[in-house]
Each structure stands twice: as C-alpha cells, then as structure tokens.
Length: 608
Image (tube, rainbow, N blue to C red):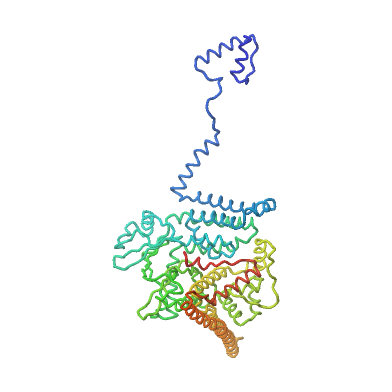
C-alpha cells in the first residue's frame, strides 16, 4: 500500500486529494474496476477542446463568405479589403514620419521607395475591387498634383482596357432591363465587347431594321456594390483626412452625387438629347462641325443604352504629327464647344477624356467632332454661371476690384491663387503674396494653403472643382497636339460675349419696373458694350504679342531643324508651345505659393 499511493497520485496527475489510508484500498479497487469496465469518468479528456466562440467563428466565417460571394457580389469582402489596405498605407506613412523611427529608417529607405510601395498597395486595391474604385483612381490620376509622381505612373494603368464581364452576366442584365425576349429587337449581338470601362462595357449589335448600334451595358455587380463602395470610400477619405489633417473629405458628398448621377444611364440619354438640341440651336441643323449619336429610348434603361454606331478615329489615337486630320481644326472645335458649355449654355460635359471623342471627315472634307460619352454632366446654376463669366472677364480686363469682390463672395482668401485655377496661368493682382517655405512639411503646407484659399467652406462653389478638372484636360489635349490653338483666346471671347448678352437680358427685364427707365437701360447697355470691347481688345493684343509671335518662332524652328537634320543628320531642339509655357508658369505658382510639384498628367490622358 505504501508503494501504491505515489502511483495513484501520478496516475491522477496530483489533482485530487487522496482519501485517508484506511479507505484507500477500497477506492483503489473501485477505480480498478471502473478502468476495467471502460469508464473514463476520472481520466483526463483526449484531444483538444474548442470553446463556443471558436466553434461559432469556424462555422460563421465560411457561411458569411459564401453568402457575400455568391449573393452579395463580395460587398463585405471588398469593404474589409479597403479598410485593411488604407489602414496599412496610413500605418506605413505614420511610422516612416514618426520622430522615433524617421531618423533610423530614412537613410536606408528613401521616400521614393515608400511612395512606390504604397502606390502599389493602392493600385492593387483599385484593380481588385474594380467598378467604382477604378473611377476613383482615374479621378486621382487626373488630379494627381496632390500625390507623388509614383502614384501618377501607377495609375496610368487604370485607363487601360478593364476586365470585361462574361457574356452570361451581360445577358442576365439585358434580360432584366429589356425583358426576357429582348433578342426580338436585334438581328445580331456580338458577344465579345469592343471596349470595357470602369462602369460599363460596349457591344456591337444590329437591329432588326438593319441599323448598326452599340449596346452600353453596366457591369452586372455594380448595382449591388455602389452603395457600400461609396459609403466605404467616404469614410476612408474622412479617416485619412483626420489622420493626416488634410481636407480630403471636402466636397466629397458633391462628387459622389455626380458619380451616382453618372451611373443612372437614363440621365446619360437625357444629356445626349440636351447636347444635340443645344448644338442644333446654336449652329443650325445642317452644321457639320459637331455630332451627337442618336439614342434609342425604347431600348435604353437605367443600366443599358442603345445608341447609333459611328465609325471614326479616337482622339486619343491621334498625335501632333497626324496627317489624316487637321488637328488645329479639331482642337479649336473642342475648345469652342466647351466655351459655349461653360459661359453660354450652362450645361458642361465634365469628362473630356480624349477617348470620349471620335474624329471623322464629312463629305465636304471638314473634320467632324463626335461626342460619344455623356455620362458625367453638370448643370451650372444661373447665378454661378454669371459670376464665373464676370470673373473670367475681370481677369481679362485686369479688374482687381471685381476679382476681390467675387473671391470674398465665394469664401476664397488667396486672390493670387484663384486666377491660376481659372486661367491655368500666373496672375498678379496687387501687393506681395507670401511664398512657400521649403523647410516646412509638405502636409502642413497643403493644410495651411487650403485654409488660406478656402476661408468659408459653406459658400465655396463646389462646381469649381469639376470646371478646373475640365480646363486642365483641355489644356493637356491642346498641349499634346503642340499648342495649335490659343485656348485662352477662344474661352475669353465666348465669356465676354456671353456676359454682355446676360447683362442685356437682365437690364431688359428691369424695364418692367418704374424706377428703371429707358435712359438707364441705354446707359447700362453702352457700359456693358464698352467692357466687352475692352476685354476683346486685351485678348487680341495678347494673342498677337504672345501666341502669334510664338507660333512664328515655332514654325521657324521647325524649318531650321529640318535644315540641320539634312546637313548634320542630327535633330535639333523643338521650341515649346504656348501651353508648355503656361504649364511652366503654373508650376511656378504651385511651387512658389502652395509648395506643390505639379506632375505632367497629360500622358495619363493619351496613354490609357
């Protein structure tokens, strides 16, 4: 018995208090009988034990994933991926810029390497989530002045051909939108798309009447993903703005509203009809400068557009050396119609990507500009449109009093920076502006500049963000073709004429009141006419001194280079165009007053 007690203690793992020695013999025999009978009541459990939360998670996570993948278009997974990637980017920059680690890491890890890594992370997020995320990335690529050059280089890929949906998904969308028997309207539909974008893909088709059309079909999963994607993107931008102290959430609701409007294809059909009517009213039904393809409303819904098929060359495929078309005529027509949209019509196409325009020759031999995408439009409020005309006219006439008045009305404090956003060139009002301190942190500079520029966010017109984006795209297109037209002249002429027409119409309505006489009307009309002539005089003088003289120098340099090439076999340098010079001036203003290095985002438009 003395030798059995230690064995029993070891067998039970020293977990139980042994009974007195007098009862130990009977307990031992009872345990022995239980062990012989196969009972495991006193033996330790065999195998691992799982807690209830572990079992619940083990069963729930796969179930939620399968449900999200096959019935919810991976909405939950996409949102979690966004949070993880953005959180990782924030953590990388926070650790790199922290006082504790920056001195240890920066000598061995340059900031360009950090930008390269974080831009790859963000590109992975956008390309994996696809859909609206591609649209967000394209917006960042076009407005890349706030981002390092590594981001611009990476985001060029977002303008390339996006992965299309399978025909089964497209067929399901067509059945849901046009009806189960939609094929009775078509003689043939090509199942392979001719192009695929961030929002939709395009298929060629033939109606039963023999008309050649194109079907623009929204990506199948976009309807279920759009709400969650936009909410997640808004929260992410506000989170980043809070972390870095930057105004990244400013105007976000307005931007998202415009994107949601673009995703409603019925609005695109309406925009196309509106633009077609405006062009016909302005130039006449027989004019051949512009063309908007016909849309078939009976075969168009919120997710499907059926429109006329047009054969032509994409503007994105042309270069300054193109001989097939007169690029000067093409660029002038493009800038002119945008001037009419901004200053006269008040209906603006806010996505002037070169891929959204086709060029073809009419029977008369003149080039025709075909507008094939009408998704992102913006209708300018009448008060803002007039003030914008007045602002442009004030900049043309060097009217600093009107410039200050409009700046205060719009909650803008940096009067010298505002003209750079409007004209995309330098402008000096009066006084000496403070310059950028290169020793300061770039994030602090951007934050302080924003608060200096926008002193009152409640009255700042958010339409300026889309107009500035549009103007920047027009500048890049003109620059790409060698600055063949004077963009500022075309815009200024239409702005002056539109403002004069607005003031005359406003004064005509004031004649209904007794305190406004015909004499007052005539005086105001003459004053408006004088201001318009003053603006036109400045425009024509600057055109002769700056643009025309520069074009002569360009042509002379081009001829001289041919002579040098013929004699020496080496090409000479090419003289910069007007847009190149304005670009340099804008870069100077951005660096001197804001501390931003403006990158060349023109190739982003044409390489995608």
